[in-house]
Image (cartoon, rainbow over all chains, first blue to last red):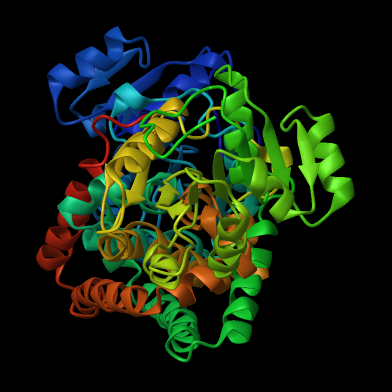
Length: 294
Length: 294
């Protein structure tokens, strides 16, 4: 059992995973693969689905009662859609034991951390997390024990965060294979608006532009550029709205670049066009070094 | 040796490939793999590179003389950047034998076909081709014998096209594993503006938006959405300019979709946002069926 003075994540801890979909299921699968010996408790709304997930070997117990799971857990990871994370964290915090660490896996951090700041009982501590891993696919059936391997996980401590719990959280994500980066919730939302939320808007607009009669002419370029447009509308509308100001600001920056390209094409200006495309190529190629995917 | 009355592509034909990069090299590799027995002649500007390509086993002969290669060939495939295709076809057509079929692999067809219509000597016939296969990578070193396998190849006959040569051209691409679709050059350019040229503009604008300090937060979503932004600026500026009107028209349609998403985010209108994202998801998922990549 963990206490607030611990600064490592132990393989014997009881971990409650709230929302056992792609991310929650992958956390469970990853813990299993890495020899976790403590109980893994899944919390969900659907009893049949929880039974399936238990049968699949991802969790030891499944329960519809967040309070029941939270009262036994050393670590609670909330993997629900972003708009319901604060309520789940608050509910869990009221019943958990002293020293329990609460975190999440949401794609936005500012609104979640603000909603929780100073509103939790003293025995519970919440620190935000965002593992930069995912898929346009959904559900525990796509859970992947190596989803976090070699990926960045952002954690967002604030002024009230205790060093011991922060170290413990980092240790947890490192156990799953991630490289942990610390950012303020606001810096996270600014950066991820650009690297994740904006691409989702762009891919959705592009996919929606495709006329059915042209589908047969969509090759790998179109397919790759729009892959994330197949993501869940419910999840992503919540993300866009939870980070609306930053997403709109990055959309403005993007529109500027798109406008430059449009102007060069309109003016049949080959030199300007080549220069703009070279800037894009250089930026894209800078992503290649030191990554497992490209 | 082929005559204008033949309507099949024979494995004994002499094939000249003008421009032995990714596409030209892959045509050569694919012919080899499928048991082509006729000579494969590569035409290029750089003697050393041609020697390398010959050493790699892709071609039987390499020459800097388009005329020399064209005079011996039964089939000539011009795989140069789009802006120099018409000149290469005209040069080859003046020296080739009666019955020789000329084609290309360019990503635009209207401007190329217009530049050639009625301007070739009577013994030569040109029919445009566009294999919908490629990569952001360049050069014969990335040649892939299966690049065309299971992919669509568009061929663009016009009123002057002879049925026998059209059948022969289709047989050639089918030999490489492609499914052939006939379109007019104009219909090709309209469709491909949407499925290929527009995604390249969008991906370039998105890649150019990425600030260097945010690179570490670019995960698979950003990477996939911008993969084709690493394409060659020279090649793609020529493509955008050769199909400028259609590209601009598709950019308008895309801007409309992007504007709808922006408005929904600005208005914090979750219902509208979900609806737009659902349209995108449905369009993207319609691409999945019957494809090798998704």
